[in-house]
Image (cartoon, rainbow over all chains, first blue to last red):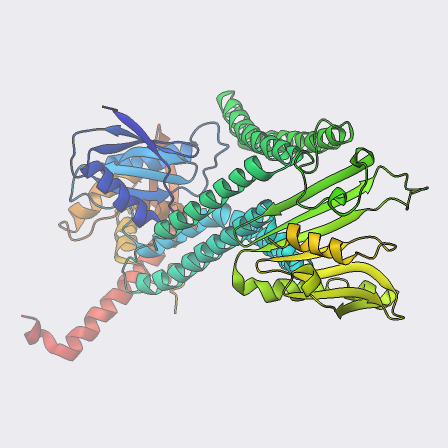
Length: 454
Length: 107
């Protein structure tokens, strides 16, 4: 039977009443708070007993202090004088316990309690949350921009969806936390005028749900990367995760090392953040440069080139595929999937051999029926701007030869053909381009329907 | 409307200042206030710590000596005046009460 355990506790920084109730419940069930770690709270097994906890704040404390300041030690001694023993602390957060059920609380003046808490909150919680909120708003604006410009691509990329989803959740958490704090503060000040204390809002269940959603989203992204991602994506993902873990360990390791060496708060803060940002810059640059080098040297690939595409030039014409370069890229999510196939001869851009057929197509897999019409309209109109410039547009054509439900052909205003078609099948929309000189024959159209319409 | 700082003193502020008429160690106030009020008023350790800091900042008390972690304080002239003002305010309230209800009703 384990005598210690560690738990991830998701409490708001300001939720002192929520923390107190939780710790009292833990003590009653035989688990006493032992230490507040960097991420986890440490508990040790004890005889179950009622215990009072009191969470207070020492606003001048910092996570970079080499050791508690004289003022902080004085404060703790004041508390000890009334029977409150320090159970754990983390920078400004100070948690005390008392076996006496009738002990005088540490805070007996609600106005002072609100004021002390706000001084602590202004130093850490509020600046960090407001910076993250600004970043979150920026990210969500970028996300909206991506969604407006190329929503199908975005909704098909698990990585894009994961990061977008995570930013939305983060923005939600930040907003809820800030609103909950300021709302509580306003009401608590009113209550304090009457000499009453007001419990802090407990957003812990909400934070747990958010964390669960992010973890599920992360797991789903990982599964997609492992099963469907290119080797470049797998490398980038693994490298980023390792780098983030290294950076977190570096930040805490360096900070704690300097604390042990007795470095002052300001020196520790300056050195830790400087080293952290330099190492982060170097590592992320190294990841990108290595990725570019690995792709250019063939060590990693951008897409799955090993599998056969569902439709190949060889299905449509009698050609030797040895001279062809095939690139398949794509991603999928629970909403949409989008795959692109590019099949050309290994042609010289300056002197292409146009006598050989080529093939390019995009498959958009619509997994939720209500998205179908929207996807079709997006694909129909995606070239509108270029169409106006070059004078072409989609024109309805007979879907029967393609075995499709609907079909459009892109034609020039003067009637010239581009040999690009938009084909609608039950759950899939195909945009296929045969090259400007190659009008697909009825047989080729039937093969396209057979291969891509299933 | 929020109360201006020290415009009126809370009961806890009043008794903390009262304890400091003579030099007194900060921590001893934790015991003195309940003793002085027959247990009617108690001051929490965190509240006392913050009050002493605020009284020092406002110049109402001054530090007299430091022995290890024991810091002693005493009222300044400003503190004495503020306490006297508060006494007059409370006394005026008592006077008003007596005028309205009369001495007989209080018995």
